[in-house]
Structures are given as structure tokens and as C-alpha cells.
Length: 454
Image (tube, rainbow, N blue to C red; front, side, top):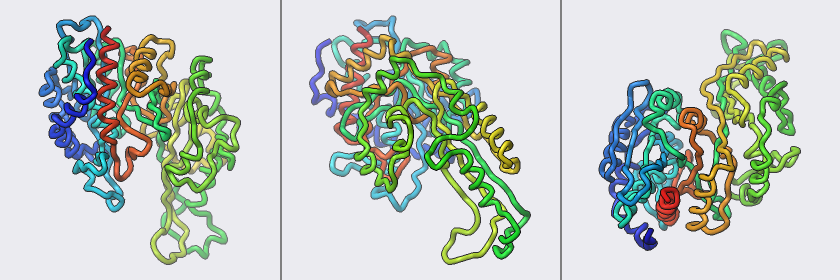
């Protein structure tokens, strides 16, 4: 294929900026159900505007899924199909007072584009459409068939996507899949993820009385805040080791090939502390594993929220009647969300916390692509051509997504490639992408599609 001049990536992006910005302005917050149907329709129309066929799938509950299809060019390989996975839903914009721009108004400052949802992950979707346009305009045309699955529930755990993957497996059939994630790290190295961790997310709560009680009765009365904090502290030691019987035993041991990739992953502790303004040492300093092993190969158990009693200004002397917590457990291969519930429940019952209630809110299993699959080299080599030799492959991301169902029902290798950077701030105020990374993301998709089709 004749090489596309680098200037074309920026020119094409600027040509399609209006569509991109109109997409960003749609407040598609899935957890609040805001502008979901409008955004799904917009994504469908975008695919059609770029020359593809599209339809909405909305017969199995939940938010609509958009299916997109682009035929291979006359000189392309119609025997090969690449599937792109993206999501059109975004996180809420709170806290508003920490934004320096209007959250849903795309704003460029110093060549950085700010908007809620831009890095996670509307820019990635637009980069792919821009790449398809460039290839369709080339003499050879699109090098292979391309399909899209764009869902609207990723930010709430994708509770319905497996139903659609099972029913529409033939529609989404492909040879490989490019995931919605991927970015540059703090040292400007481009990172590719070949899998994800799973998740088991829980509500935990306890009630110790029918009403709040004057704190003078604390001499003889227990309260919900103490009950819950004691129950939570029993799950993990002060050195951050999980104490639940059977928790680590559920893990499927990583392969030697997976371990070899983990050993190559760079990690800069000082940069991590600087980026987030960390006030405490990294918890792995007291563990028998490297930071890379902890991030990729081991599960986590985290308290994501606590609520009890009075937390307003001044003092209020009270024994709280109720305490609540959110618990986030990230899973590695071998771990099932329902089994995690069972071992936590058994642990609390065994240790005298029968009164502490536990509810599994959402669960997703983990997934890792077979790193010996030829698609891994195709993605790596295409990335190195665009980003240089210092490309990092993670056997899986420390984060979570609905990748397991794609592996189960479509049986495809999956790798992530995106347009973010270390300070993109996904889920945070001032979410952003750098324009130069967006242009490179278009270039990578052009290169990848060309290599895949050949």
C-alpha cells in the first residue's frame, strides 16, 4: 500500500472535527440514563456518514448496541474481518467545581482537547472512523472487512452485553478484535493491553439499632460504624495481604510467556507518586511481589466508599445506627465474582460478623489473549512503526471491561489500542486527550488495518 503522508492524519481529523465535537457534546451518562438513545442514534448515523452500514440492537434489554459494518475495498482481503469494540456511554462529570472547562463542551487549550468522555472513549472511536475514511480514499481501499460493536453500558458494568454477544455471535463474527483501551504511560511509551482484570463489586452494610443513639451510651452500646470497620479490617492485614480463606487459591497460575512479558513492563514509582500526589508509600513495598506483578497478575481488594454517622461541620455526639461501604475486588483468571462473594460471606460468618450484609452489585470475569497468537505480533509491529520500538505489551490491563464475553462467544484474540496519555484523567475532572496522540491513533489504525488485511 502506498504510504499516507503524516499531514493527512491531522487534515482528516480537522475535516471531521464538527462530527467529533457534536459527539462529545452528547451527555451520554449511562448510570443516570442521560441522552442514551440520542447518542446511540448519533453513533449509528456517524458510521453511515463514513460509508458504513449500521443498525441498532435493542431487543434484549439495557441500552442500545450499535452494529457497524464496512466492506473491504476491491483490492482488500474480504476473507479477513477486524472487529472494533467501543462504548458511547461516559461517567458523570462530578465534581463540577474541579473542572476548568465546561464538562460537555469540547475545548482545546494548548493542543489538549478537554471534555467528559473524550479519552474514555469517544476519541478512540473517532480515530477509527478517520482511519477508515483515509483507507477508503486510498487507491487500494479498505484492506479488510471492518465491524463495530459500540455499546452504552460499559461504565455501569456492561450487564447485558453477553446476552447480545450470545444471540448475535454470527453478526459480530470476526478474526480478531481491537479493544477500546490503550494509551501512553508516564514515560511516553505506548502501551497495549492483551486482556483485562475482572471485577466483583459489592455493597456492604450493617444496622446496630433502630435509631441513632447519644454517644454517652458508647460505654455499653456498640454501633454500626465500629461493626463495619472491624468487619472490613478483617479482610486485609495492615501489610495489605488479603486474609480471606480461599481467595488467592482461586487464581489460575500465569504462563511462563505471560510472566516474561510482565517482567519487561517498565514501572516508575516516583512518577506514579508525582502524577497522583500520593501521600503514602506504595503498598507493594511490604509485599512479596513486584509492582508489575501486582498490577497484572494479582487480584485486589479495595474499599471504594464509606458512609456512617455525622460528617458535617462542628460536632454531633452520636452512635450511628447504620454504616455502609462499597467494596471493589479486581479479579484475575480463575476467579469468579460469585465465588468471591461466597468466600467473603464465609469469612465474615466465621469471624462473628453475621450481621454485616453483603450484596454483589456487578461482576465480570477476567480475560487474557493467548500471547502466542499471530495477531499479537501484527498489533505490536504496527504500533512500533508508528510509536517507535519502545512499545509495552501488558498481558492484561489492571482495569476491567466486558472482554470475557467476547472471548467466550466470538473466540477472538483481543488487544487494546487507544489515544490517551498518562494524564488523560479518565473518570476524573478535566478529562482530555492531546491532539498529537489523537492523530497518531489514526495513523496506528491505518497501519494496523493495512498489516491485518495483508
